[in-house]
Length: 309
Image 1 (spheres, helix red, strand yellow):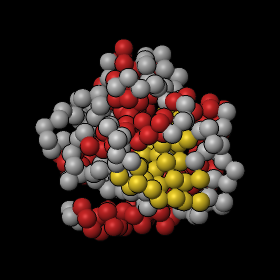
Image 2 (spheres, helix red, strand yellow; image 1 turned 90 degrees about the vertical axis):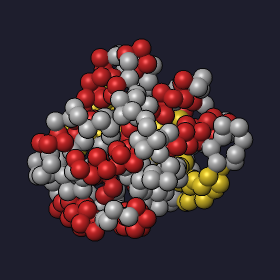
Image 3 (tube, rainbow, N blue to C red; image 1 turned 30 degrees about the horizontal axis):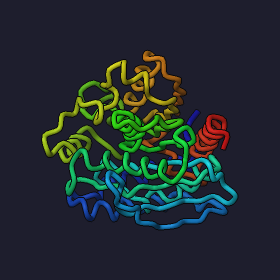
Image 4 (cartoon, helix red, strand yellow; image 1 turned 120 degrees about the vertical axis):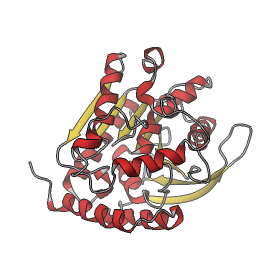
């Protein structure tokens, strides 16, 4: 089935964004924040900016609560925005997160984590793990926390639980990864080439630039805390259940498919949805395109079932 006219809009927006994005990350961030313009406002949702406290390993920095009307007080989404570890913010993903909060009937904590080029790995991961720790300290039980992210945030949806468990924290209840970047090496995903002419936003060269910034302090792309697809089976099998949404026209298509295969091989429960003809993180079109609405609705049903939210 061909994409809806509304979904075709995202390809147009992505092409314009890619053409305008200079190498200057500060200008690019301002442009990227306008991605929220393709979504609608979610009804009944309120927003609260906050500064998370600094205590020991506690995350410090800005964040945003996204609260649905009459949402669960026992469950929470840890929402990790995408943008190649260089772009994106709670502003660029605010509307999308609001639609997810409504669908899941749970508040979402959006983390404004440190990004490149100012802060290379492991800054983003450390901030997101510490934000997870913050939710636990606020009284949310781990099984009632869902880690949800898109693109690089989709990779974080796997690496945050992995690092959290290495630090002795309990495993979250579910990970939801939208168009995840799970193999930062850029060497093993065939869709980097097969979708090079289909993906309106990213190219292998773009990902190479983002990779270089993220690994600027000498980290190795094969590290499972950077590319979770390379986690050994003894760690992979400890990860929470996963829901992976992959887009058919995305250069990262194989990242999602292969991550699902690795999880299944390790005995982890995983639901993989491949959306043919869709662009990278088509869920940006929340409230606008039927495909995005359906994906968000299905994920919401899964979250409510898993957590009884």
